[in-house]
Image 1 (cartoon, one colour):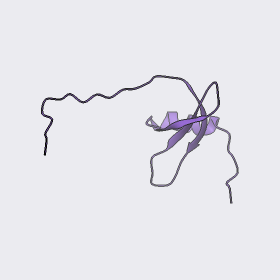
Image 2 (cartoon, one colour):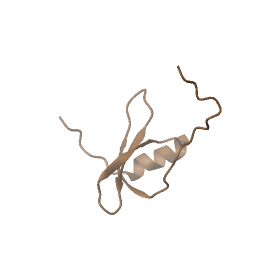
Image 3 (cartoon, one colour):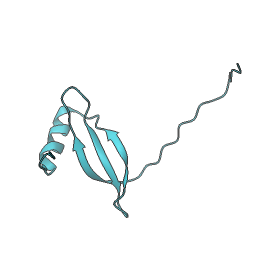
Image 4 (tube, helix red, strand yellow):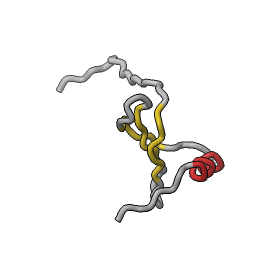
Length: 70
């Protein structure tokens, strides 16, 4: 087994602005947002919504509710 002692780990982040496709809430799970690229409207990923309760509630009121799929 080879150990890599002293090797720094790196995390790389890209800071971009995206369109919010959907905000998903499920009972007992953290809320998350589905995002799309602004130019192509293609799905790029999701992110947890880690904000205060007041800001989260404003987001829920501003987003358009969609009927559930059956």
